[in-house]
Amino acid sequence: MQTYYYLLASQKFLLEEEPFEEVLRERTRNYHEREKEIDFWLVKHPAFLETSTMAAIKAKCPQPAVAIISTDKQFITWLKLRLEFVVTGEFVAPSADIPEPLASLSTV
Image (cartoon, rainbow, N blue to C red):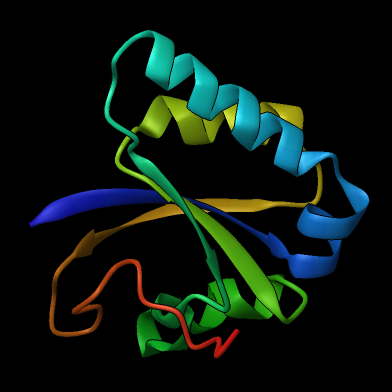
């Protein structure tokens, strides 16, 4: 089992109103330069929000939501400091509630 950390926001905010693509591009470049394996993922309409244990978290975030999921807690903390209007947290997976941590309910 692995602990995953997430930053959650509305898709409109994170993907349209913020220059977030630039942040991801810079972070990816930095990882490649340091020969570090990518440990973060952007997941539209994350399935983990549909679990009963995440109902309160889902209620805090305008829908449709998007999540940045990472195994690096410091990366999520760094993102939270750069962005407003986001929710952060963590979960352990795979579990009975969250069998696939990076699963999406989005068809696009």
